[in-house]
Length: 573
Image 1 (cartoon, one colour):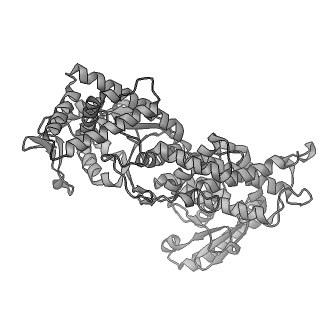
Image 2: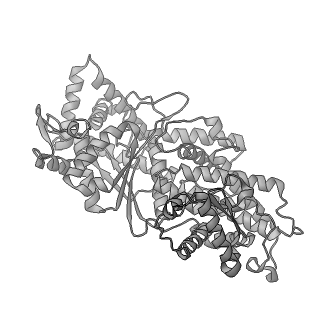
Image 3: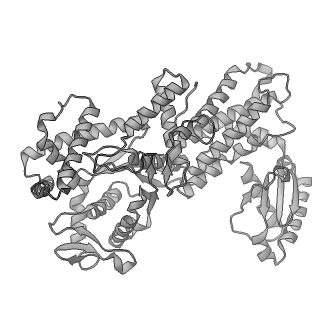
């Protein structure tokens, strides 16, 4: 795009000056629109040339101005270059901005894509909902972030595999099985609605947790511990039958949730498949990496500035830590990724630091190629939730309640449209916040069709598409490619739109989709301002074709950007 062309010219000028400059050429936007379209700071060059930045800027402008006068290709691109203190400010010709819109329209759904991760296998592990428990809003948070980053990596050329790691063994399973055994008379039939079946499992887990934690019910705790052992050993046939029912119901339940939020996984890793190899790897490395301590096997993280953690407990059972070691093994056995992204909440950050260090001592690639992203906490007005007590906000109910409010607000009878807008409101509220920061979800703000919200972006897209539908059909002798669409004044939205590819790369390099969300809000705001002050469909206006092209390009950019956030568009609202 235009920024790349300007960077190329700067390098050409530096070559003429005999300057070897291997660093990245960074172009920024000047503080005021009237100062130009791009600014290049001369501070790094000042050290090389042993001159002040202001002097370097003057020298560069002299050389660039010479190129503009003698090279038609350069003069078609750059209207002027001016030294402003230590900066060289460039003004781009209006023809370039007009031509760029046609390229955006021609690229369509490919607009914004790049090659940053070309040839790399990118593994995105996220969501990680435990079987036998509810899918709550915390899972929706990590799902939204992981799905988005996977899509962004794919748009930059990566071969993306979206995976999830689900706990189908462990104490939480034993607590649910204990509840199922004691509430069998309430168990729904296998052909009952998937949501009712999961509601029963959630109730059983909450009840089992309550019995396990009760000081007055030691027998329950002992029984749950025994159930947990048999989950691993598979020695109790009656328990195995209950387990298989619960596992099947949970997987079917999660699959329905993934359909609703627009997420699809390439593979489901299960703890039942990783605990054995994880336990084996830990035991094989006792004395080299791990140590025995009070009947258990631990990783002495305190030796490495971390903290000690148990990987195999005194009962001889692998903990979450050992299962995660097995997951590292399984990931590399199946995919051998170039980049392996794991997303958890921030509370897991110290935990994962220990696991990642231990894994790296077994196989250094596991540590070197793993990126851990810790997101903040998501809270509603009611505060934090807990699946242990049953005080949780179920993701499905959250989406349905939000869709109901949307339907009333829009007088929208189409459930699918209302659901898309609801998901946009929820996901955007998560993704517009920088990764790692806590989020307090305010429904009134999130559902607004004005301001920094998902519905606002969807509405802007609908507005642009409405304009396009109303435009007249261009006659054969006035096709877009042949129209003179160079305009005297380029609106700011016509310049901002060209930043999209760089924004996508920045979102990936920082592992934070909020850059795309922020950009889309800026683009939509500028377009709506343009829409309010411009008669786009006035055919007598000499800028008519440019305005139509700009509207098409904005609609395409919003659509592509929302896709990268895992948000769909609607055609009418």
